[in-house]
Length: 274
Ligand SMILES: [Zn+2]
Image (tube, protein in one colour):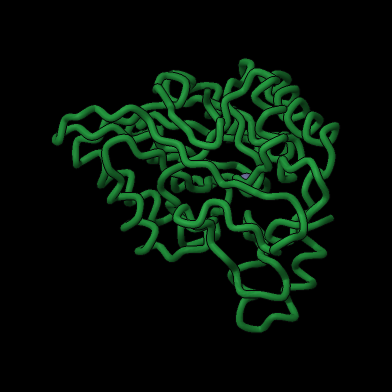
């Protein structure tokens, strides 16, 4: 229901509509899209109103070896489809990655789910929530998406995501990443108490899947030792995915050691991992 409403709103924005109608991070209808910006993690949108939001960073332990930098690739499967361009490279090149799935995405992508289940040596499947609502426990809008809005709704978003994963044949997730990757401190505390680490990132690889192919490739291919890259694997019609696929090959050529969050010592700020 929401994508239809959003599309209708965005259709009124002549310069923005084509790129944004299917974005994973719907922009605020009245303003140009703001790609997630790791450099400005905590900027609340309205001074003095609404919860204070953070967008936590996450790094993994560095290898310390210049010729073999360690990088954790993380992909969000928010809703919509599967990006075969990325999935194929990961599988064919045997590149390990951590995939954050929603219950919503699992329901509509049985073929990609089967690929994940067949390659669990490669993929760490983790929790991106039930309905892709931001894990913020007071009512607010983030990129035009209504936050969960209460502790009970945050609990449901997290628990509902895990239930769907178990039903699909995956194991109990240990990492959570909420829609929009923004949280308030009390929601972080609550999710940590449910047994999760919260997955921030250090490189915004595809700008919420809205960057062009070359910009995406450049960002991801320049990942450094200890970086955690976030990108999307649910937007097969966006140019960004082409850049992701090329960057994966470039990283592999560079000798990168790819690690999944389940096997790496992830260190996050805002009390997200310890
Ligand atoms: Zn998402």
